[in-house]
Length: 184
Ligand code: CUA
Image (cartoon, rainbow, N blue to C red; front, side):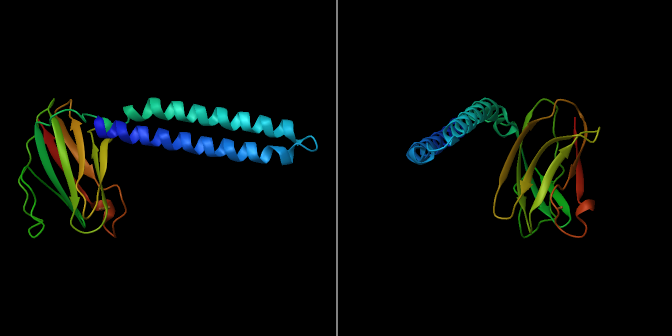
């Protein structure tokens, strides 16, 4: 959680800075507006905006730590699956993929209840890596980007066949770009 928590703190600090700047600008422009009946209306607006900002900050700080991004962040995955995306297929392997031989993957074996870490890369353009259960519900996803390794951790509770669909338009055959794997 360490890094994630620091990022959250950074965002909160930025929000605080923005609020302070807003207050300084508001108080320096206050005197000019006091002529006429505008003062009251502006005060209401400021109270409204500050309440809205405070609510947004509270909501974000409460909900962000529970976003899927932080799932299993402190756990040690029992299995690593290397995923390579390319127009228009996925390669999955328990061994690191060789970009020079993108077709060479080994069938992955996953067990229900274990934490899996997918390390997702792309051999060409941006793709999506979406995992769907047997009811065609999206249960986890990340992007496949050239030059980056995107890590996605997930614990499959139920054995069964899971489908992978590309979630980012990547060319003419995008909608046919899919794969599947089995969890025992
Ligand atoms: Cu790959 Cu869409």
